[in-house]
Amino acid sequence: MKDILNFIDGAYCEGSIGRWFDDIDPCTGQAHARISEAGSDDVNRAVSAARNALSGPWSQMPQAARSAMIRAVAEEIDNRFNAFLEAEVADTGKPHSLASVVDIPRGAANFRIFADIIANLSEHAFPMDTPDGGRALNYTSRRPKGVVAVISPWNLPLLLMTWKVAPALACGNAVVAKPSEETPATCALLGDVMNSVGIPPGVFNVVHGFGPGSAGEALTKHPGVDAITFTGETRTGEAIMKAAAAGTRDISSELGGKNAALVFADCDIDAAVEGTVRSTFTNCGQVCLCTERVYVERPIFNAFVDRLKAEAEKLHPGAPTDAKTGIGPLISAEHRDKVTGYFERARAAGATVVTGGDVPVIDGDLANGFWVRPTIWTGLAEDSPLVKEEIFGPVCHIAPFDSEEEALHLANDTDYGLAATLWTRDLSRTHRIAPRLEAGIVWVNTWNLRDLRTPFGGSKQSGIGREGGAYSLEFYSELSNICIKM
Ligand code: NAD
Ligand code: 6OD
Image 1 (cartoon, rainbow, N blue to C red):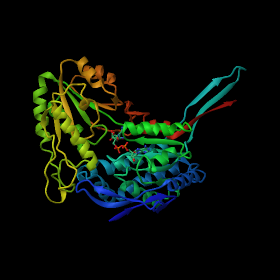
Image 2 (image 1 turned 60 degrees about the horizontal axis):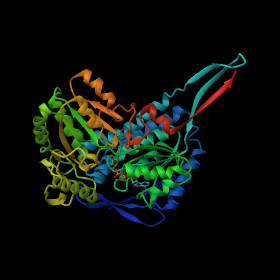
Image 3 (image 1 turned 90 degrees about the vertical axis):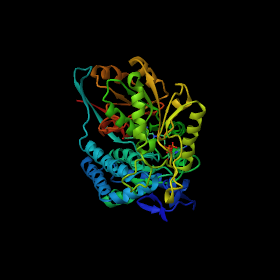
Image 4 (image 1 turned 135 degrees about the vertical axis):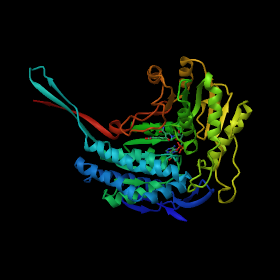
């Protein structure tokens, strides 16, 4: 069994508290590695290493040189593609067909885009008249924020960790990363990548462990951390905001969602069904952008439900390496129990179970994996907790609507505001509706199509701030105005 170690000041090390915990393969329920938990002394050491690195050459490095190093990280991830793929799949159980086209390539692409952004950085200038009849020049200038804590979840481990580590490093910060306790393996591999491209020791550190009472809490409460960027559950985001309040540290958060899809009768129904299968069941529904509420205009409601059911039933669970596998497992036994708890509650609430709502029986090595069947419900009341709470599994509820206004109301009637999807051929309708959807991201006739220059984030309880392209600079750098009297 492999050991997964912390990475502090350029070296892999065991946590000083001598505690280890298992890294479970969700396809088998068996441990495939053990993880060394970091204690508060280790977190102290990681934060000190990061702070020391800031006084070295890293943050003063010419932008072009730093950009070249960030680009080299991307190339090194490409070079080690198979090691990253194997680690990600062992931690998550997701099919190779998904991890090899989404997770690992995006890990590299995240470094590439921020290498480009920083290489092409420009500032604003504001020439002005002065009261004495002279002139002055204002210009903006950015400097690193300092030590940035990056805390990430288990659903897209490499993608979401690098989405934040890359801009943090590109802006000249030093990072202490805390990956999810469920999926630490790819983040651990990044340490060696950083060393191999010459990123100075201390610029990138990794501590492993849990949230409360462990490395996560120690890191967010550490006074040596200048800013915290977090992806995960809304309730965890609230706890981290409280920790960040001490010292008024900056926070960026990407949180939960209960995303709606609106399917109008004028849509291309083939595309809408195919897109909704992806938006509901990709990664076994464990993507914050996944659709959990589908609203379909009444004339096509029955046809849409039938077609979505037929497609959902084609998604066979299976081994990650099997080309026929259409859906992987949930991340853990605990999460499987949470999702199956929703299955029971839906039945008790009188939902019609169109398909799924149970656990498939699988023999052999995969018998103890955390599988659930793709599930579709109809007939729940809009105020049911099942339609309000994020489930984060391969589940959606489908309800009919009769007008544009009703569809908009239904989509927006949620505490969350991450993503929404609109399926229509009517361009005027698109322009009427899309800007009124209370979501950080609106996709029209597609889902999860990403241009990494665009702003990404959620409104309401789905997060604070926007990251992506130049928008990331607002969080990862400190902006000054310099005013020169001429
Ligand atoms: P989680 O909030 O349980 O954990 C996320 C990370 O926070 C983990 O590393 C965990 O150890 C750490 N953590 C937990 N409590 C902490 C504390 N008190 N202090 C410091 N760190 C703490 O989330 P999860 O279960 O890993 O991920 C699933 C959730 O993430 C879902 O709600 C999903 O919607 C959300 N998510 C959101 C986005 C987005 O971009 N909006 C992306 C992915 C996942
Ligand atoms: O694509 C991205 O940049 C991103 N942050 C995706 C988040 C997915 C949530 O699970």
